[in-house]
Length: 432
Image (tube, rainbow, N blue to C red):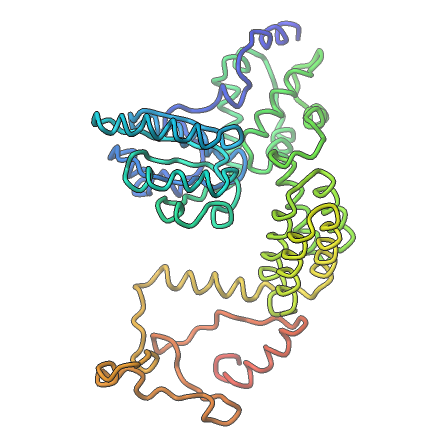
């Protein structure tokens, strides 16, 4: 394989960069955004770019999609990294964009890792985005609701990208072997078992997949067969240090959440310690504990959410290293608590009904009537005030339609068992 080695000695870009598509036809994944009649397809066909925040996990194609949109627009392109850029850099781009605007030219600014900008930096973008001086495209792996200030969010569209599925990853592997300037010249074999392993351990991250594949190709000896053992070695060749900006960060938080969901406090503490010792931001961990308390415990233990919020506040006040004690306190409690996702599932069921039907009309008896005019229009008429009835309850229809739905189905775990029995007593027809 000496010839193979020489092909990698020409200072060419890494495989993920070589395989980055330049047009939407070659882009793989995110069909919910780019297929016919979807939001980005409308832009691509109409050439009208708008400010967006691309939110998705690593390797899902955020930067690639941004570049394709920018190239298609024909606008003057500026790019900043939130890691290394400051207010001065932002003002420089805005000044140039204002000059462009006065000349009838449009400008677009791409900011990678935009969640790393602090409030002051984000504030400095507001006027330029609002008045059309520039179009903003931001890329983030973090939930914009937590990391992007509300005024900036209201001036942009948030587009959620998903991890790539196995079909997408299959296509990416085939493209690399068939079209890459290096791999296409090599007589390499990737058995089906190796392919499945590579896709599985990449976790929907195209960059991780291509990096592992390239390293595997480099460490082949006299064989052209990329075995599972070679792929394992290739994965280990990457830094084993915890990097809160890289793949291991997301793999670790996933293991942490799944350990708590599985009611294993010991495993949860292990992964918590991995994150803390790796320098993970305490706010990142604490926020996910708050989400977990509602998503995976809910009413099975109503105190879980209060404890998670208290833990967040305590950790924020105390700071590292002692904040680790607060996080451990909350983690062990949540991992040991009874579990239920019933409230989370109720939300999803209600979303399905609302998104697949017209906007509901609020029934007159449920409307408020603070004025005589509203009372004359029968607002609040025939409303039955529950506290006037036995057990502070009266059977009435609170839906905008005759047929009632069961969205919330309490489990038999913890406090939710009591809730279930109470609802069965109150709504006998609904909870048979």
